[in-house]
Length: 365
Image (cartoon, rainbow, N blue to C red; front, top):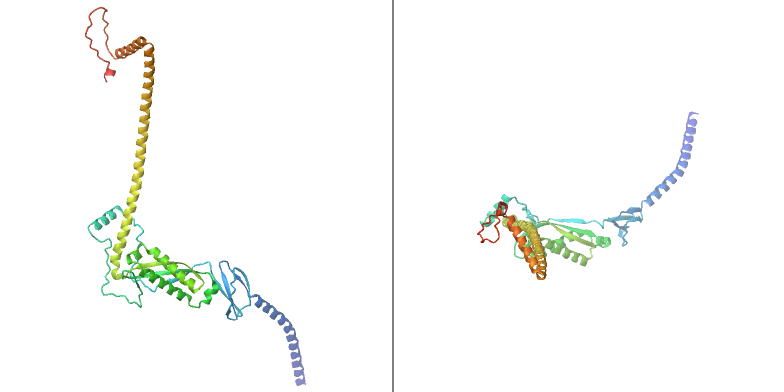
């Protein structure tokens, strides 16, 4: 009886389990369908602004370039999306020509000196002294072309430098089709262009006046090679982070650079002094000219007034000479007598006496 009861209970349990599995299978179908739908929608991607994308479908690169917006494709691993920030500059650091010395400053940038420092610099330059006096002790050192790269200039000098190549991806399909080591190719093209440009210039010009033109010419040369090889990139420029001769000869080149900076400083100071002096002199000259013109105008007005008065007097004299002469005599006597402190009246008909006229104190002054 107990065995039969046990078998009956086990049969009921199996039956209940089968019923449960039947109901669970229906629900699992819906869960599986939802998961499958979500997986299919995962193939929709969003391409951000300033981005372009390519698809690798079953491992094969598709030629179509997708711009910003929604990208409809298969979910991974069927489709893989390659994104490119085409509006952003990418940088490639070029440090194979390692510099083991200090960086030489820009010679076109004037240096601000105090009056005492300026006087000391002038004194050193006039007696043949060196502006750069801290000479490095580098005797016995040599350059290892494997560990510390360098190149030559047209006057057979050794020069080292650190550079940054800036570029943008303009055509993603060509960029990806060019291979996996495109940055190494760009680096070699950059070094070849820099070597060619440095070899065509003397070291003094490369370190000073031709520094910016050197970088621009090298960037143009790299762009020409990139266009010829159809790499799908645009060279934005080459930045010269450092450019210097080796430490063995750095002190002498520092002298040249500092002398040029000192020359620029003297020139700028002289130009500022010239500008301020010319402005002050022009102002003083304008004031003097203004005063002179005012004085001339006053003299001309007085002369014109006196000439007009004399012309009227001459016309009156021609009409009535006796009256004009008496009026002039009366005015003259009035002026003269007004300046005399004492007066003596003599009777008429007597001999003419000698008169001593003494003017008044205010007229005496």
